[in-house]
Length: 135
Image (cartoon, rainbow, N blue to C red; front, top):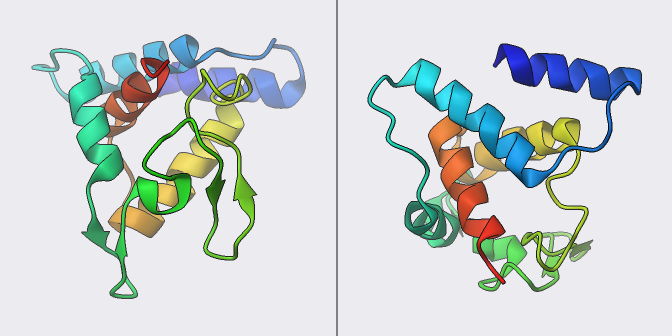
């Protein structure tokens, strides 16, 4: 978490170049290891299940990541307000997961909307591992 905070600070100060999804995965891995001594690595399979799993939101509506981002993360999604969302998969959207502050913002917002809580580092890492392996 300390390294991610440092990276976010550098980005905000304009002193760092854009990050890559792999940079974010490395930071999430370090955070996951600090939180779980038995952490064995991220899983694209768990990430795919997480992406598609339906959960009942605070308003009683069933939601998944795919609700807005589509079943195919390479496709353009739609918000509930019918605004376009750029594809989630980095293979279809080269800008996805290249801004640490945006990644943190959107994980925080969307995890709370879909799960009603913050995502763990392992959930985020599994999710991102799934997305970076989509071609």
